Image 1 (cartoon, rainbow, N blue to C red):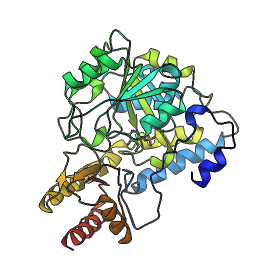
Image 2: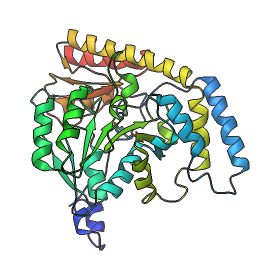
Image 3: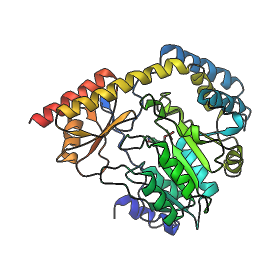
Image 4: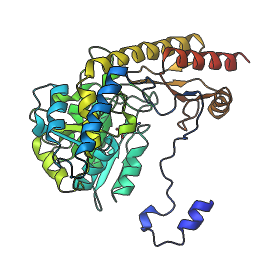
Length: 366
Ligand code: PMP
């Protein structure tokens, strides 16, 4: 037992949390940080200035609680998403992690279950344990894909309260075809399973990839979760949101803390949304670096998975832990997701991506 667990064991911690480890991607300050799928581009100067001005205005009224319903922000998010959505369809929180947590507080909880399909975002089981929800791990094929028929069969058998489908999936990077989402939704009809599609990386998908937003009309139990942490380069501001039927937002109003989105957060998000085209221009740059990584890794004899995200998952690494350490030694931090033979790297700026590719090539040549 490590020191932390030893200290904890003296406290009357909930039985279902005993022995668990917290989320723990390493935060190491090195020149090239490509381990948590951040947007490594600095904000364009005009966006930076707009946020500073908006925050300054918000500070003038900071003695008052913020708009508990963040109506202006919901309207701006609906306008950004399009698809005929209005502010009634939108909900937001401090990062999409908090959005997912609120959904589990409302639709999961003791005696209920959450299902997802590993390898997928490592927070799902932790969000389940935090909310007292039992986690069910579904299966994928050995190439990490899943078909509509397979996913629907597993959901029918497990009959979960909530399913999360991550598309594009973290850590593999690949987007799910919409027929998988439709089939899972249908499979959950009798059990009224709530289906969340986590589209944290949707803006990075290849042109022609359809968002699950197109499936929302007529599907009351479907929720599409998004974030401003990635495409909008606002990981530090903590803004996530969802689109769904208005009654989903009503359910979340029962569990959210009052005034959970600070006036600073709302002002920041609004300023960034009003500069969406400038921020999305950087997304195109990141997609080009992502595609460059895929091409270069293939020439090195590695096996990158198709990526619709701002990162690449690649196989063919004989000793991922040793490779991870060697890259770190050269000042390049990537992610060992604990899958034998694989590593994951975020697409950075052109210079960062070059540093990563050069270091990896040197390592493989040795
Ligand atoms: N979903 C996925 C798939 C993610 O990879 C992440 C962050 N890495 C999140 C949600 C949460 O992001 P945030 O809370 O910053 O919105």
